[in-house]
Length: 439
Image 1: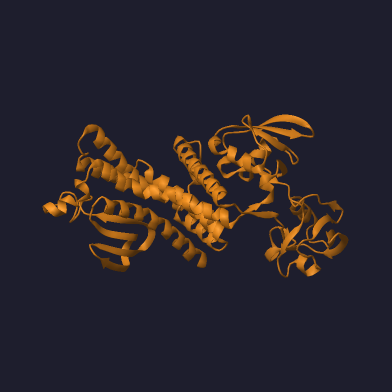
Image 2: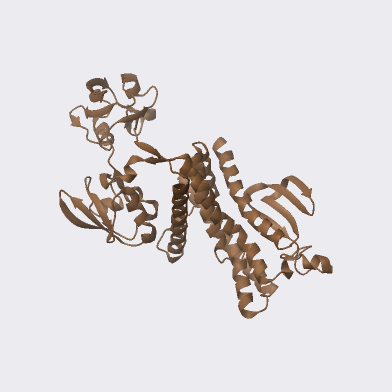
């Protein structure tokens, strides 16, 4: 429940920033703002200050700013107004002003990361150590794109589609513009350079691990589950496992297969603790009497906190913002072209879940997730779908060209189509969320 509440609050912040953009620019243009709402549906809290009613509503999945002379209704663009009110009507503003007001929401969402990501880099970003190391593969997931492409543990990636890469981080970044395309890898194996290929049916937008590449991971214990065999036998966090029974252990990825082979037999485990070799005996245990056999241990991950000075943080924040914008635009482009599966679309449940989990960690993680979701919200709203900001922008651009407003009838029909498209997208997103949670 705490995670859900934290996620809703973080989403609320982004909606507030978006609507604040519309609100501020409308005020600067002299337009009368009737309502500023966070959420939809019945009101939870409402207060009128001056000519504007501020409210928070039950459904926390968006918000809106209602202006005089906007759309239909009692105070829409077809209502007769006094000369004074007419001057403050949204519909009576120049095309340039209307474009500025409508664009301000998404633009605020795209600007926000430029303000908060530098703070994240100054506070300190927690990053796995391996990201700055050469992209040498520690394990290839069975039945993955990497396994199908012929990759092996020990292969070191040196180029992707003829673009040289020197680390896991650089390799992940090289995928941004390659989503949905065939990937040609140059790897070094046992001193020889090879060319290996991954088909276009891949999840490269999600990085190397989604393709089946895992980094080198020594079999060092990071944490133990209470009352499970490893904890009961006396193993401790920091112990490095060397051997289980007669099976040598060279990496963490060896453990699962070995433990399943042993089953419920008592076995000796050789390990290093503080430079001393030790041995304990234990019997793997099945959870609930079925499924995989377990020792009750989790790996130790090496990480580092990177902190930057003021100007370096601004540079890193700007670079990261551009990277996220590029990633989102490429995803949308590949989605509509069919190169990326619609299964990758996440809905409000996923957004709230990700935001809520970040809120349970540290400030840097919160700001990073806020920036990521803010960019997605901004770009989504710029899509030329009539009911979204991008649809309104499209109508105003057409008005600039034909030198007269698009008829209300055409806009109403377009908005109905846009609403249908948006509802279908939301249904798909909710379906994907539910499949991820319970599938």
